[in-house]
Amino acid sequence: MPVIEFGTKMKSPFLEQWRPEPGTLSTISILSLNPIGTRSHWVDVPEVQMKDRCQCVEGICCKAFKQAWLTYFFPIWVYDNPGSVEGSFFVLGATATQYRNLINLAQAGDLLRFDIQVQCNQQGSGVQTAFTVMANSTLREIMTEEMKGKLAASVDGFYKSEETLCRPMTVEAYNQMLMQINYDFRSNLPVMKKDNNNQAGFYPQGVPGAMPPVTYPQAPNPQIPFSNAAAPVQAPVQAPVQAPVQAPVQAPVQAPVQAPVQAPAPAPAPAGAVQGPQPEATNKISPEELQSMLT
Image 1: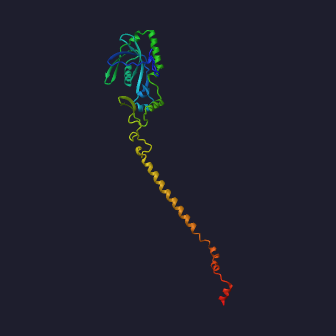
Image 2 (image 1 turned 90 degrees about the horizontal axis):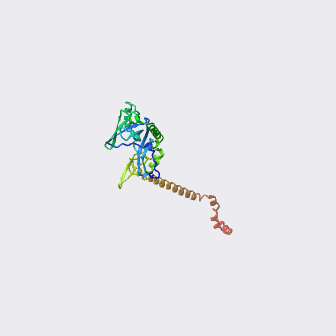
Image 3 (image 1 turned 45 degrees about the vertical axis):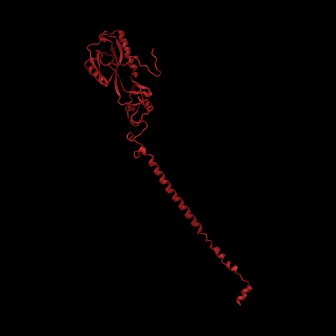
């Protein structure tokens, strides 16, 4: 039995995908014409140990991981050798183009009654697959009842274990994963691969944490660039505080207080009238001197 790393999930043996080698000619038999359709992204992010085909939620995943792939999964039987029923149960993951080709073949005949020949060739950096309908079906001509029962169980397991074909994801799961790799949600740029000292890694296109005006057109204040935000803040604070505060405080306090206090000082005029005869009191003469002056 194999030793499984903790956290790794084993896929159902019924859902092993068939990947023919380039330059080979194979014969298959489609066991059901009701494929399982998926819309997914190929996510390869070593920082969070994610390398899988993840379900598309038609949201941030499409911006971070580019275009979603449409895949149509069919349960198939792959013959080991032509003219023999020996083979293995696999899952055919047909692309949108391959799915259209199968639809065109189905117009010429029932694909459940005839086998299909698959030619796989290398096409540049990719692989090209061509389908051709054969005149008969070896599997269905000599299939025993026991074989029919095994195939029916395999097809039933195919539909019950459909989640293993594509990792189920949610918007929250994508957001959490992108936050762990410091993805800038405002840039809407795809996750790009970069080389740093020959070590592969992933981060959003551009410099993480930097906010150039070109990358972020929707700034909180479009009239003030982020790099000069500190300059216009200090100027309006210092100018209006010092000038209007000192002038009105000193002028009205000193001038009106001293003038009214000193001006009313000579007001007690009646006191002057009472003290008026005092100079005479200081020059009083005796009655005798007054009599001599009159005579």
